[in-house]
Structure formats: C-alpha cells, structure tokens
Length: 270
Image (cartoon, rainbow, N blue to C red; front, side, top):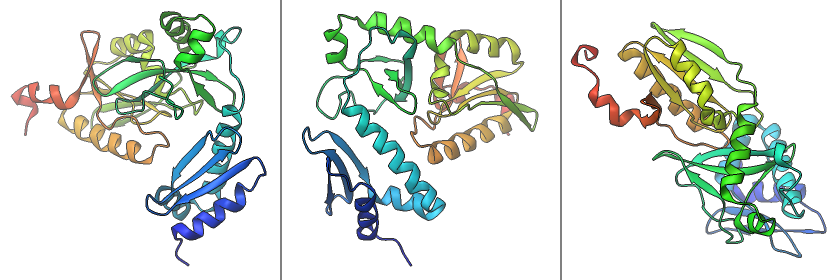
C-alpha cells in the first residue's frame, strides 16, 4: 500500500504521543512539527523526505528518525554550559547555505571556511550535540577565538584511520567512523599535510556529508570523473549533506575543482 503524507502523519503522531509534546501538521508545506508545549521549541520535518526513507529502509528509518528527534527535543529542554566541558567542544562543517541563527532567532557562532562551507561549533552530548550560539557564549564570558581554539584542539585528537580503494590508477581514501565529526576532520591541517606528503598526483578532498571525509590521489582524467560521481552519490545519500563539489588542495588552500579544472593541461584532455 502506497505511503502518503496523511498516513505518515498518523504514524508519527503515535510515535510522539507524549503529554509534554505537541504535534502539528502543515498540509500546505507538507511538514510535521514536534515541540515542547511549555516553550514551543521543537523540530519541523519534511514528510516527503521521511516517506522516501521509509520506502527505502522501512521501520528502521522511522526508528532512527524518532530517536534523533527525541534526543534533539531533550537537549532543547536542558541548559547547556561551556565551562568544564572543554573536551566536548568540536567544530562541525556545514554548507554555506546553513542557517546562521537558531530556531529561536539567536545567532549561531560560526567561522567562514570556503566558498562552499562554514565552521560551526558544538557541545558533544553523546548521542547528539548542540550548536553553540551567542547567548551561550556571552553568558559564560567566552570568546569566539577561545571556542575555535578549543574545538580545533579536540578535532586533532580524533582517529584518522581510513580505508582505501584504487580505480584506474587513482587512489581514494575514506574516513568514516560515524562519530558525527568525520567531515569536520577536514579542519585537521596536520592530516591534510600528511596526505599531501603521501600522494604522488594531485590531492583532492571531499566532504559530501558530515559522516565521511574523502581524499583522492588523482593521476588522470578518469580520477576526476570517478571523484565527481562519488561526491554526488554521497551527497545525495547523506543524512546531513554539505557539498557535492570536491576541492583541490594547493598552496595550503582548498579550492572547488569546478574552478581549477579549467586550468588542467591539455594533455589531460581526451
């Protein structure tokens, strides 16, 4: 039987049937919202996206969604502090189009990264994390520089184990530990320098979604084609997509390949 928005709405209403929460369905926008009754803080989800995941993965997808939203709602209802939690502060990479304010209109703390990405900061809470906003920062007399410094220190402490595959003379490396900060490891400059020292061709870097970081040792045109297809696939499948554009690492800078690809020598062209 075909799943519809109305059927999915009813399924979610049953899952989020708690006295402290309120659920609403917006038929025009095809969205479903769950929020705390006392504060009206909550989460809004797009039903077509949920239906698509349900059609692909069934009950498992719904269970995962309910778990993530329940965790998010719990975090919203708790007061988070920075002091004493220095080891739990991490950077998170997001698309340049990502919101710069919380749902309550409070500016989020972020730093520009590339033309495609920004760096936000989060307190790790185990199964989830909370993005740091200006209210949290000023309340505890922290500065953006301090948050950034602590976050960069912590990202360098995380594992950098990777698996690798070779395709048509090009080597691809995949870092995916599913700890929520795989994409953030693109900020580990020591890791990128290590990869540049290891690679023999051009070093490309991809962060299609938050749960994977891709390095590519590119030796020929086929390598670019494979990387482009790989990035599109990962971007489409990621829970939190970031960018489908890979970067070339040259001169300590990450530049989108679509800009630099035109500069490839004629010998690389068919």
